[in-house]
Amino acid sequence: MPGRQPKVDYLREKFINSASSAQSLVDSVLGLSGINPNSESHRLHTGHARRVVELAFLGLVSARKKIFSSTPQIYSKVFPDEDLFSP
Figure 1 (cartoon, rainbow, N blue to C red):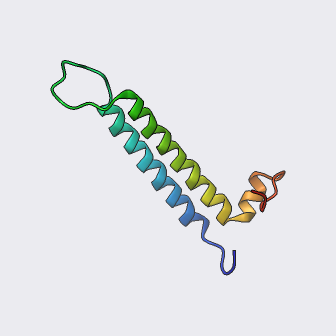
Figure 2: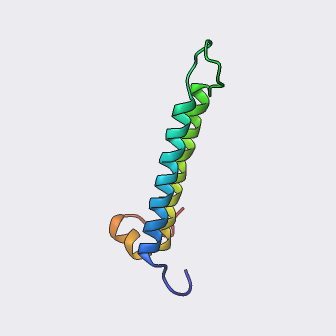
């Protein structure tokens, strides 16, 4: 990555915000999910709620990858056996 390395604290804060957002999304979706034919309010099918939870998890994985790919020194310390430039 050309230029100055990104600040680790900034990336950490960004990851924490992503984690907080994902947790909030999961809490909201789980509160809406359920199957109750006698309920007057609309409910989200449990299968759809599970997919939203999976997407929230994938968002966290993506945020983690952004941190490690932006800071090669940290990546090489955490994963010393992996090649940084391999797919």
